[in-house]
Image 1 (cartoon, rainbow, N blue to C red):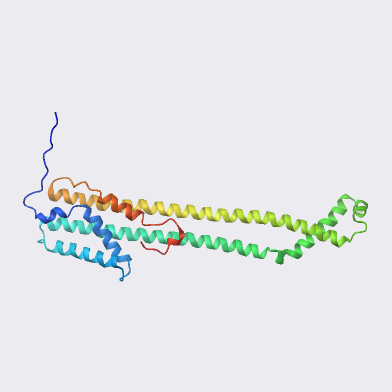
Image 2: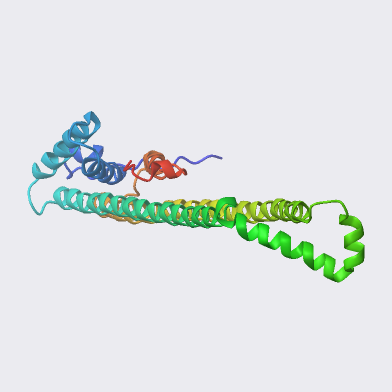
Length: 257
């Protein structure tokens, strides 16, 4: 046997206009306030947001001060302001963190470039040649002068020394390039980790802002109507739009939306 739940209706004492102002309006209201703050004055989206917010403000003012409807709408307004400011604050913190990560990456790359330039072939050529000559004569001393003389008889000792220096230079360049490549890979890996952590932190913080505003609006609705807030997808849909408003690439650091 199936049972039919009784239909929930609002109190007949409430103004019928209030039915259209459900709790999810607080989130939409707050995000429009945020859009007004961050978009340029020439933006058509900003102008539309201003019109929407102004209509809501006029609606609030149309109710008598102290009336249940006015108290409810004022609570929604405060939740909207809190949510809008919270999103703006989180966006600002994210932009600052990403800019700092970019600066750290650029500084690290500049240091590697300077080190590479200072230890380049032009700067270290004479040192490599001297080292090559030193190694050549060290080999002669270790393995015996007569053996070395036999191997170098009829040859210019200076050419042999320079050949040794060239071999050392090639080996040294390979080793240095390998270490430089490892350093650069580490720099970019650390940068990617910081960007990912910043974006994840931003998403979590915006969710917290959303939940606070949503709970405030739901409680206000329940106090006004004595019935649970209507279940809608507006909260979740708008929240996903806010969270996905960031891009995970450094090119979006200057962006505000």
